Image (cartoon, rainbow, N blue to C red; front, side, top):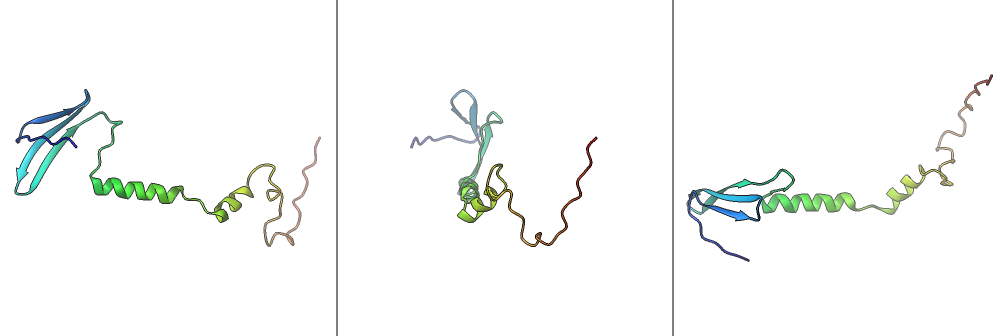
Length: 98
């Protein structure tokens, strides 16, 4: 890790596109300002970890979920299956063709 010392009003550059400005130092707190392209995401560490955890949970797929989704896949043997409770429903009327 690179450690730098900066005073209020000074800037650190990261590459050609990112600037980190020291805005204020008060007690044990440092306020930083960032200038970066919109496609560069900037998060506090705790927010970044929450986003990463949420993405990990969203990416987890259970066998039940896969089975349920497979029923809707074209050509799936389950795709033609009659939904539960629909066995007693009347068949849809056919539309006459000309």
